[in-house]
Length: 363
Image 1 (cartoon, rainbow, N blue to C red):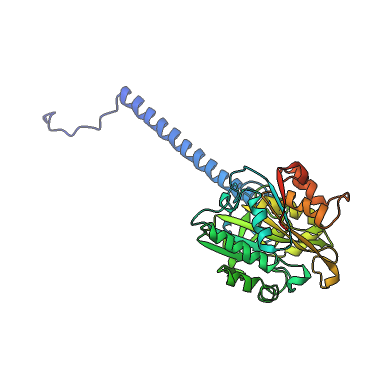
Image 2: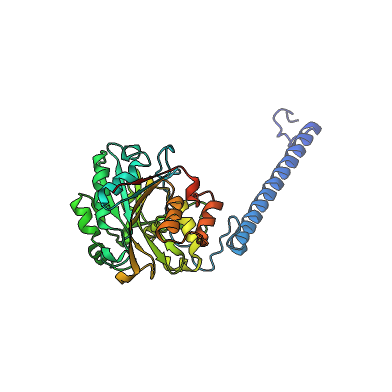
């Protein structure tokens, strides 16, 4: 008889407890497999749906990838903004200074003194942009552009206050080189030691003007403003065949690039937008000569009459309102629509008599 300890053992049957444990492990594995499958299926379905949404949703819907006109595929242009409060200084004293007389330099100084003097506005080390109207290739006598002598006097006054640099900039409608030369602005700026900025394509950036109707995002003559902390506008008083009158508020139009002539279809809205875009340190209304008809280009001495007035103001609408009433001699006539728009948008005061002002006669 063989010893039972040397006989091969038959495979032992699992116990009831082992069978129960194995069954539980098998069920857990099956459950985990189902969970992974459902999760993968949901993720795949979500990706498919998201992709379908992105491709099929209208272009203006959130996360839409639709690009019917190819605009989404273009590189995004960085936006710039001017300072949130513009270039204005603390509001105090007179809003409007009006100087009448027969000699230009006393008039320019007198008008600025009437709103607090140049040192209220310009500090030592300031970098100042002066924006004249150089839109057309016209001689100064025709009144279609800023008087170059006023620009020269103003530049000297700004330097006297301690400015580090004065930049003279505009983007004329006609040939920039010819306009700066013919108007006398180039020579005047050079004689007063100002830096001249004549635009080229690379000098423009897309400016964001929150709240603007027409130029919320629009090409802007940016180069002269890099590092600048004060801005002064200097504009002639002139008739305008589209908007009634072109003065200090309309003057900022010369900082726009692109196809800006399209704005002639809604001229009063663009002028209000310009006031929203640019909040200057102050403005000078050049009423030495007045282009009272055939504006804005003029072309005949018969369209011009003497004004013998210079206005300085921290509110371009107030300055322009005075120009409309007394320099264009249209008091009592309905003011152009941009005055009302400026008032409604709290961009300025079109009733010049209601603001603090000082009027001086200087011989």
